[in-house]
Image (cartoon, rainbow, N blue to C red; front, side, top):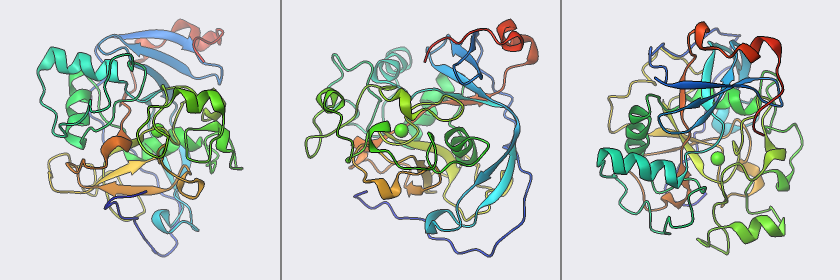
Length: 306
Ligand SMILES: [Ca+2]
């Protein structure tokens, strides 16, 4: 990827399994509508505040990082509590509604440089980490931690790509993708390419049914860029450091395959925006109280959505 983004090159000694959970924020979305289970069997909800569809990622261990990826070594085991994550990237229409209701002034002033008319379903881009944080607060949610993002992308088995171990350029929006109808949908931003409407690649769904984890917009995480192993309690989740580099995950439409994995890490200053026609985000939240779980969740009712 271009710009000043710098790969995180770590070479820590191997470490044993660790059990870590993100700090509880106590901030669950205020108005959740249960949607039943998705085709992968996981509970889904809609946040009525912003319309985001959320997938519930159950508590449990997963593998974070990869010993052969300089930006993400060493691989280590983590345990996360149950949480919710956006099924898709936040869209232009959602972000516009946030601006209309709050009067928020974006840090990155070009967020609509490519126009949003008729682009409601495209991921919002040109947003800083601070803009993304402000949206999440408005919606009663938060950004995913880097660990939450990676578990949602790789599943409990630690897949290399959300769909499996083998690269397939047609399963996400990337520079090697050649599906004509998808290319025709793209915003023309660079080299004849650009973003596609969120959720355009259902065959690229993660084991939890989360979409566009690789490609399309690269996504802000809450975490500071710090060495592995990931720990929730070592300061990397401190939201109060405005100078800290923050992690970006999943690569984007401009990337080639080598960086499009569930464990590859990138970082940026939180305000850097010149190349931000790559950068968007998705939401996350703490798990709802058990009483809010859908009745269909325990009965395995047929899925809603794709
Ligand atoms: Ca993405």
